[in-house]
Length: 423
Image (cartoon, rainbow, N blue to C red):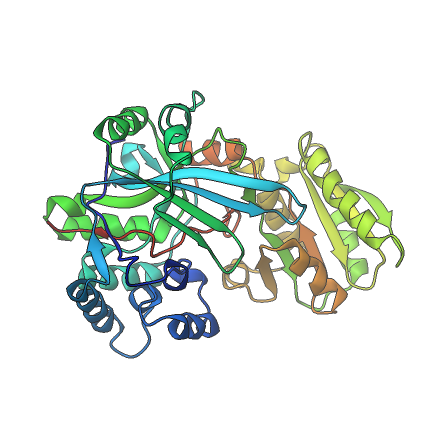
């Protein structure tokens, strides 16, 4: 893959407080949070990535040009790569330091197999992002790319020397994730990064809509800068790259008895009863058992309304023979759950599943449990953590993962760097 440094536009830290102007990607910003970001600072990046009003794209362009004119946004002295460390603590208390870098990569078609998607996209978001790109002529957010380098070349040969220096940016977001960014403009270090990725295949972890938007824009714009897109790159060999599952919550009124009868046809079930004194302890054991068992065979957790027990569901032998799908997809717990239980037994249509009608896809474990405890759902299916190997196998064979199957956390902040798409 061809990698280039960014002719970067960044916030002028002599004028703005970086903590107040960054924001998560547009697609996770609710209307209430949009209001919060608007009120936080007049220069918050939300005014570019998710502008209010009827003339959103024109208004975003006007904000962008005004901020450049006023020196709120400035260019870096040299083309640069931005090395980033994201520090956070998981729900289980594990401290994570995910490392990666922000640069540009040549836009390649999926047919080239140099860039692999793993999720499907929708037309609406792509049309929206294309209008914004045409208005501003810049990438405002990064695409999340994963590559594989067992030698950890960039981590060992480049990153170490910068981690002891003063960061270019150090911000803590609203999820208490710290984003520490170091500016790399040394040509030798940039060449090491370029050489390391020169023969690598990239997997899109997050930002499929933005990548396909970049592809569409590059075909319409003949500027050489538009043939590259800003991405964040992280090494799949790093243990700090964690993929979180997205759990399935049944919100239709279906009796626990009927749900258990459905799953018993396909899964061996182990019951973990609890009472008020040991619920948290049993819940922890429940989550650990899902992960341990899932290493041997497809395993899913189940929590039912009105029942004081958690259930471990272990797929019975030869059950995947009942699924009409390529073998590489039959290895996925979500494919099995959707095909055998949600579609076949609980009678959800594909349209209902796509629209999340009577079913919700929830990222946070505590929300999945709370939905049952607060009588807002009939069942919560707790999914195991996705395996990077499975994602790679699906993508390299030309297939896509089920809808809302992976959750790469933490999200990448907008406002760290802007990549102009013109000279």
